Length: 346
Ligand SMILES: *Cc1c(COP(=O)(O)O)cnc(C)c1O
Image (spheres, rainbow, N blue to C red):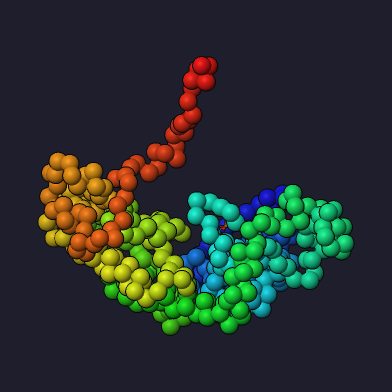
């Protein structure tokens, strides 16, 4: 944290940064205000109209604006963080620029700054460019960090070209709005921006349904596995919701397949509401259904077919290897899987 302290700024009811609170916090901390870190478009899935004003307020109080570049694939080709007031931004290459990062790595994030901050960028005594050897010194072992993965982004940019990258942004935003439009009548979309539109992601609010029926966001996420989907981001940034970020890379048929699965799941929730199943006995809580569960004893109040082929017999069905587990347990209980030392004695 480099000696900095975090001051939290409130969000307004529409999910945007509360500018009145921001002004108040800036006034209060003007003597030692370093910077604001802001995500644009926000992870609430909206382009905030007030982003330029937000940057002006922070600048007027002597602070810098750090724009979290994680949502750059809602901007790329259309605008730049520097144009609406950003001083620093990182580009998550493993998000907008195609580096696959399942399972936590690898990630790379070049940091871009306005000219006045350039002298404070990391340098490296072994940098291939002489001008980048002096300065504050290195923050990673090698001048370009994990340079071995950079060719992925380089090839992506070369293959897409400026036009292709701009089109990817448009398609990502269109896909998210398509999902919000199709699913909005089944699950409320928590935040919308200008004209009722979202940015590149939308938050489906399940909290009302959970309260009314007992079916939780976990149940929906696990039931999606039976329909052949890995669930979207769950309970982030808002607990009890799903955040859907389709990106530019799924075709319409796949996005429709996802929407239809969500609509079918909504139908199952209605059957719980109607009293046909209790939440505990429903295929939602029973999900995901493994092949082992299918061939074993069956005492559930719904059919095996509904459990594993909710959309009809599908030869390409994905079979989950494990049923529902206590997902928090594994995070809280460290288990060493290595053989005991004695096993090596022989
Ligand atoms: C993904 C994400 C991050 C984290 O970025 P990593 O480089 O993947 O760790 C931070 N902020 C937001 C808004 C994100 O979506």
